[in-house]
Length: 130
Image: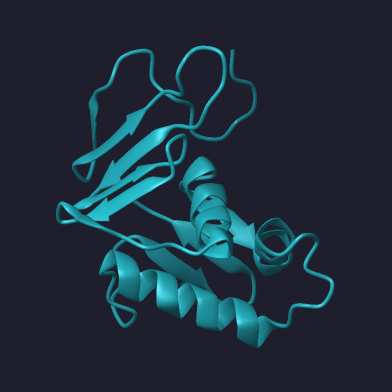
């Protein structure tokens, strides 16, 4: 069972607004499969693709994207993102996070001037829409 107010995996795969597909984790644990635009992310198998081609994501990029996807539609603070991506984030500054988000946007094909998926919430953090 899933608790909390955030996005919940679906009992059965279904189309979501924005042509996104969000599949539940396999029984007994494992990570979910996410699909948005032409990006497919299988965190259980650590297989990521864009347009059918392999997509290389660093461990910190994987953690950032997973946290944002798990909290889809919510603003995730910069502190929470640093903590999740870099083991507590105590020694990571804002520039490191900003650069990581820029690289992540480029990899998933999100336009930084008009983002469709990874949006900056100025003064707070980032939010995944989709």
